[in-house]
Image (cartoon, rainbow, N blue to C red; front, side, top):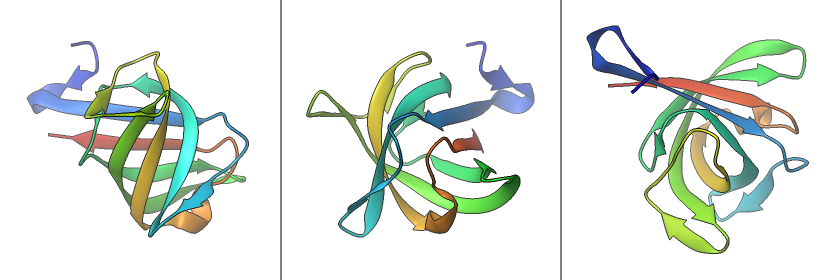
Length: 103
């Protein structure tokens, strides 16, 4: 509940902690932790912070993978892999923080 903001918007934030992205079909797979959430399959990250700047991206969460199992969401504090597709892959680097605001 604490991640909801005015108008029922849900903040999402994920920090890459696994050493960098890995190609996964048409997307990338990154390992890290959910800092604001829950982060759900279908959510979009719209901001990437890292590499010396803040960048606009449009990256969709296609999968949440925890110990080899697929889940629909991950909660604040949970570490897992996420698979992303969309625009802005070049901004997904080791240590990146991805943020978004979902209805």
